[in-house]
Image (cartoon, rainbow, N blue to C red):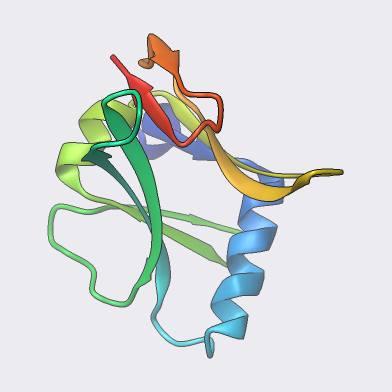
Length: 112
C-alpha cells in the first residue's frame, strides 16, 4: 500500500502546514497527526508539531509540508484525507475519515 492510498493531504492542508512549519523556524518540525482515546465520541484527533521522527512513523511530504503519523494512528486513519478549511466561523484542520462510524459536532472526535 502506498502512502497516498493510506492517508492523503489536500493542497490546502499542505500550504497551511508548510506556512506553519516556516513560522516555527523552518527546522525539522513536522505536523504530527495522532489518534488518541478520549473526546466525546471515543477517539480524538491530535495535531502537534514534532521534530522527533520515530522509525515506525508514516512520513508524508507534499509541497514543502511534512506530516508524521505513528503506527497505531495509521490503523485508524487508513484511507483518510487531511484538509485545512477556512470559512466564516474560523479555520481548522479537518480529517475526512472513512473508518469513522460517527463523529461529534466539532469534528475532533469520532467512533469506529
